[in-house]
Length: 514
Ligand code: FUL
Image 1 (spheres, rainbow, N blue to C red):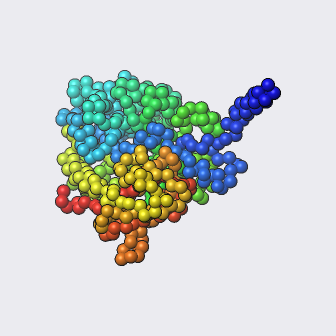
Image 2: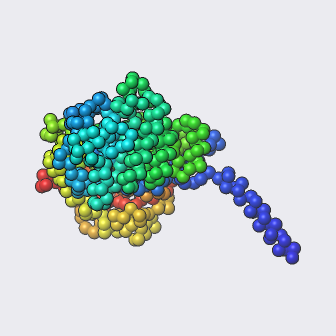
Image 3: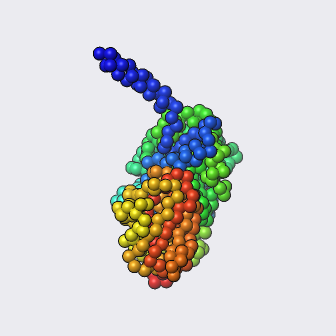
């Protein structure tokens, strides 16, 4: 009896102490973590290594390539920024074919299309109940057309995701600059997020100019975010938003060292509390998106909070965001677009490429042809991983099964190293010629690698082929052609034991054969 009583007492004590333990434990993983004043340097690095993407951030990252369609009244006035006074009568894309837009993007490997439902000029591409400054007042389809609907339908038919760009800056709305405008904006968001099926990304730019009455607007971001979370819980909110950050340039080139875990300034304690209570949260990390270094150890050590805030690279296939006839010959070359691919997707970012439809309502022939060739070169380059049948020299580091998971082109299977700085030696099934290295970290474990190098055994001696800092979701490095049968990858610095999903060696396809 006495023993049973003792066991009960012990169980009781364990039970009542559980909440205390839970309260004192800092969550090991999640898409943000608070840094406590008592945290040591090692604690902070460990916390950084365990911040992981939310589910929607992960799904977003895995798309890799997405398209932007800048289309609207500017397409007809040959401008980049309209003033809000344009005559809706000018909007008449007589051959508009959203199916052609989607097919062009799909053939190019893009997984989502973001349409400028409203740009700064305030002209709406859908049948909004809240303004006449829209397709309703245009001759296109006798005022009955709806571009958002046509795109949403075409996306659904062809298995493409839909994204919405809704400019908060509105140079047409008479109520801009007053609280009423926030209602107007939320009403428009509600229309767009209710009437067109699933929306996977909402894209807000930060422009905050003056409205028609000379007033500036105080945007009610929290209300906008709340509306989106309620209506489309799976959508990421990008740029001026909590889920996706702007890489900092519009050139198509990301950073060599690109951390998805970055320190965010603590702006407002209420926001923090609100976020902790809500899955996914609605607070927008305050960062300097254009800074050269966002997430190095130096930055982490002075941080108050670390967040998973991955980078998106937006760039236009042409000089302008909108279509201009005189830019038909200025479509970026296949070579340039390849360079952009390696410098965005290949640098731990997602590429958002703008392809503006023309006045007919079609993507222009030059753009279609360039994208087709670009995709063909990419497909041919990455179809054959030359390391696919490699054996591992040191099986203590990596088993036969684990090495397969690294070269199976399946992001879901991965290898978690038993040490912080492993070196893996691969012996390939024969001599191979390659000029590109692919590495992918399994970021649902954490982004950890800070420094790595690839060497090849040439004439019996190890020679450096290429080296880098961060890997993240995907890292691609190009180098002059190498012919070898044995290579080794050394992780030279890491924040914790790294988890790698993919390792690949490829030979670039030639651009000229396409
Ligand atoms: C910017 C806008 O001002 C440009 O017109 C364009 O839409 C770009 C993607 O975002 O902030």
